[in-house]
Picture 1: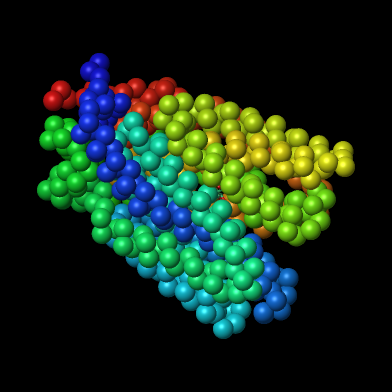
Picture 2 (picture 1 turned 90 degrees about the horizontal axis):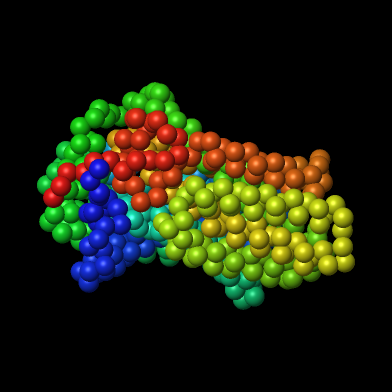
Length: 482
Ligand code: BGC
């Protein structure tokens, strides 16, 4: 079988030459700009944990109103994820991102000046809509412009931006809290990355794959040239995109029907399953409720609990940086499997620490959470978003990714909304053991169903679902000689 040596198909031989490294820089920059969408997502999901304390002081909220202010943006995100698919198909990746950036910016500024709790709730729905939709579009865009051998790393920039957004939001909360300025600037500051995203969009090309789907072949060629490929690379890439684009395509609802047919149905199950399990292992009980967890482990002062939470945020960022380096080397499957196994061990340990009690409980909980967050960050954190984009054929990618992302936000909502109730019912230990059981289920799911996509072109992955013989190993397809 011919080996695929162009820059998009695989880790080809020409990659070490000097011009290639310039091309890589260009691609890094383009992915970095798109990943600002992840920053919005991270900042806005993190910022509310500190802001809510001050919102409560100003508006004297009842507990159900507090819950609503905290979680309503997730409902906005669920709707945003669903709308993202049709928008992305109809308008293209770039235009959709621009519209969402603008919506997000308006929502963030509106939340900063909200005169009462109802305006605040509406503004949080707008913001959630923006980041929920962007969360599914950014990975799709990056996966479509990235060469196969860098795709994992570049799409993981999105996850890196999410974790940086979360960590920065904790820092900003602390800053404005110290300055006595309250919640308004905390929420309004989110407009800054959205303005950066809007400006950055002027410098990045539309996805050549989306242009191909629209039969805009001249524009697709120009986009590939802007991505820095040689003429030979561009020709080869175009011919692969053309072959894939020949197959039927249609509206979002037709894409949905296509996704429900045998073959692609498995891709949909993998996308949705990864989305649900990424949340059912309990990650956001840590991200949203870490101070509460630390306080129940004995770190009674709010400052100590917030400091410990910030440390978890920083470790999350550092481990995600490591993930960007290993994801294309080790591959998605081993990382998912090991990630699940280590998270299960950490969750069992967390449950045991709460069950047995100890005078060093605070420290032990912190250590267990470090292990847990590192395992999540190098595996499920980035890999779900990466695979939600790369496993679907181009003609149904927007639909597939938007449904997987919808499942992820819905699962996120379920876990966040039930955590405190579960702790009341099962206790801390029982709750963490329940997430450990989910971790075991996630491991089995990956073992049996999730294929390795490392180093495969998007078109190789597409052929795999159509032929779908071997569940875990995707063969690299024959590629025309250039
Ligand atoms: C998840 C988020 C989570 C974040 C933590 C993302 O991949 O989708 O729900 O808060 O990782 O780093």
